[in-house]
Image 1 (cartoon, rainbow, N blue to C red):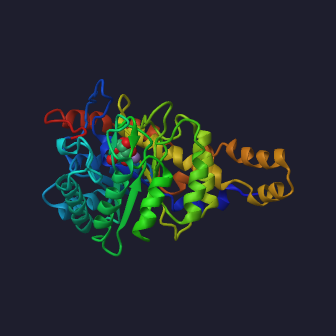
Image 2 (cartoon, rainbow, N blue to C red):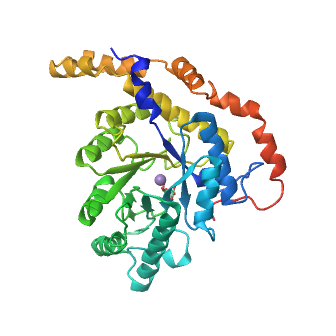
Image 3 (tube, rainbow, N blue to C red):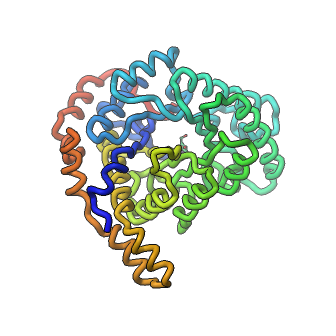
Length: 387
Ligand code: AFD
Ligand code: MN
């Protein structure tokens, strides 16, 4: 029987990267709502991310998005982040907002557009050399809206060639992380729609290319934990973009829609060695807080991952394997459900205090006055969004 004291060593190493864009204003195609205190600069976004880390001890790095987070001096930005107590993490490329990319980027029929898109990724690699980042994350909006609009196979071949050119420029410590998404903004087909396509493309590149699994990027009913198992088994699970969804790619607080699914995902992460000290699987949030406060939303999110990870670590693996191997269907399920139903919040609160952290980070932030402070300090200027 595994106790909470048995799992704190692993919990110590839990690190969930937060995305810079979670702290800016976001919304839907119908409306982007602003909230008081929203950052007006990359530095203010990093400062807010550091507040999340100070309250939770769970988010030591911040992912950037280029060009949203473009600055003149990335080395200075790295120093600023480190002064705030966090590091700069994954660099996310963006070939989905320039007019030239209306009909695709790395897959485009026009070699000049593909050149521009590849060059953008080479710019991102330069940023990574200044920020000390390991991962270049590529999510492509490339796809078509109507059958016949594009040659599906030709797009795959051009994608492979474009990725190969980017891959050739990686430094030895870099990784190319290719994210898939089954629809949106393209409606008929997306050129990297599923884990199989991402796996096929990264396998053709080499050992420094891996898959990013965004938990909101699957058709309803998909068994996501199976994909987690398979990518870990194949050695190609690079990172997660954690969020949750009810119907589409909602980018809601991870665990909010289905905490049991998050538990099952973390159970496969644990089973597959994804939390081992030597593991290079990156856990990251990719969320937007359209109507709720941003910093509390991020705190809630990393705590949800921590809580479901703790429950997953409490699975009695000896009893589970025994029941599985003896064909004890109900017994095996009960072992898993016993861990899922274990309320670890009290143990986590006590453990946090033992490490000099607030027992209840959400309450601590609400009582800190920081929300009111930034609302007053950041009254002027232009609030940042997806631009
Ligand atoms: C959008 C995409 C994808 C990507 C993120 C950051 O759907 O999830 O990871 O932007 O570029 O949410
Ligand atoms: Mn994502």
